[in-house]
Image (cartoon, rainbow, N blue to C red; front, top):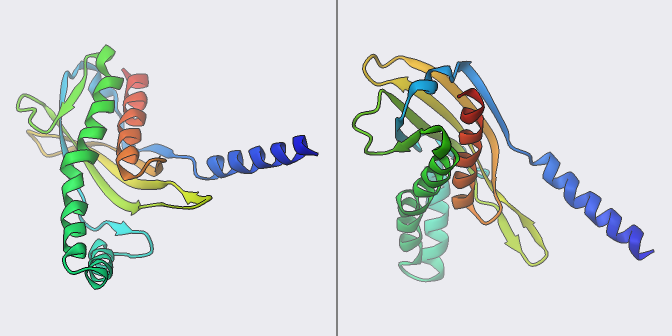
Length: 191
């Protein structure tokens, strides 16, 4: 009986992982142009991002700030500062670290200060689900993004990759790290 209960629990867990699997697709263009590149300029775009049940990030922020400040004066304002600060202190470095690690053998890396890069890679986060952990119930964070590769000199978009449900079991930071790792794996196949 215990074996049946354990098996049922494992099947339930694996089905949840399968249903929430990441999907990465080259939407337009080709990644072949990266074969001869050594560095990419990376940019981040959070404009027009939806968060959870809110179509606009600003709506989500307003609610969280009000809740925090109602609970304790200044708490919501501090949360807002951290919400934006984590982008440059955690999310972006997490993406870059695993992207660069994944392509180290291929000789390709990305940086926000790559002045000699021919191409820019813009990570546009279109959706964020912050996830939750409440006792025995949890749902991992995840992000959706559109990655656009642009020739810096001409401004021409040469490829677009879309990503849906990039998971972050430990939070949003891990979603960006997973995105870096997964995108590096996709590019490595093309090099």
